[in-house]
Image (cartoon, rainbow, N blue to C red):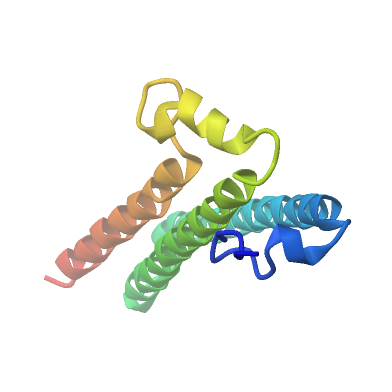
Amino acid sequence: MPESPRHPLLRVPPDKYGDHYAHHLLEQYKLYVESAHAVSERRTSANDYLLTVNAFLVTLYGLASPVTPGYAWRFAIPVAGLLVSASWFVLVRSYRSLNTGKFTVIHELEQYLPAALFDHEWTVIDRGRGKAYKPLTNVDQWIPAVFGALYFLLLLYAINCLR
């Protein structure tokens, strides 16, 4: 009997796996969807934390301006902010890549399930290119970019104050 064609995702063909193939596939699918959700939660937590760090740095700069003599802090805070913002931007892109990979696998797994809900939802929202939905990571990467621009302007201001 010829072996059934298989997707690289499937380690054992359904006809060789046994009676619990469908149940085990569904359980793996559920666990994988949960792991994708966990990545999204970690991204949200990281964004919240880094937003707080940036808000603290901007507040510190504003509070130190009128009362702190010297120029070291005028350079230190924007440089720290630039580093935090750059790290945040890279982190957002990393989470986006990880989620893209996870949802690619989810869509592939759905080929072996009775309904492909995530794939259909992605089709309904025009794969994030339409007006109805913009992927959150598209918005997420603008926030560290805006903070980075602010810190760059503060650094230019600090350089101008030396003249």
